[in-house]
Amino acid sequence: MFRNEQNFRLQTIATLLVGIFAWYLPLSDGERLLILLLIMLILILELINSAIEKFTDIVKPRLHQHVRVVKDIMAGTVLIASFGAFIIGLMIFIPHIIEVFGN
Image (cartoon, rainbow, N blue to C red; front, side, top):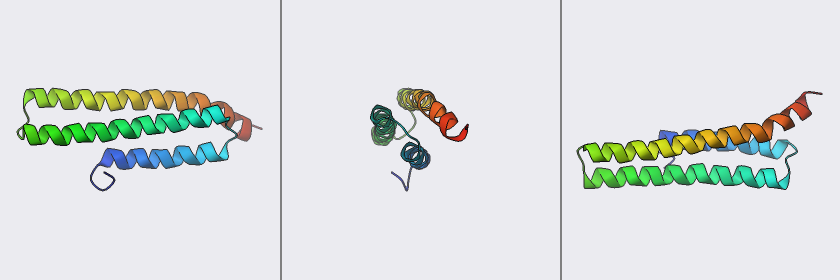
């Protein structure tokens, strides 16, 4: 996945950055757990998205309208989950960033 999928590489880089922030900032155990669950959710959805794309390419090699719709739905699913994770991450990290760097 890392070699072949650009989105997965970007999400892995984002995961590393978030991990550094989660390690450095004084988050509660619950906040760290939520961050970990969100990271896992996004990466799992991206894996499922890629698997469905590969499968539909095998079943319908030429881009059929139904295949396009399925791929768009899966891409939208990952996008919505990523956006939600980003918002939740901001809600968790911003108060801690202000606390650490604002003083």
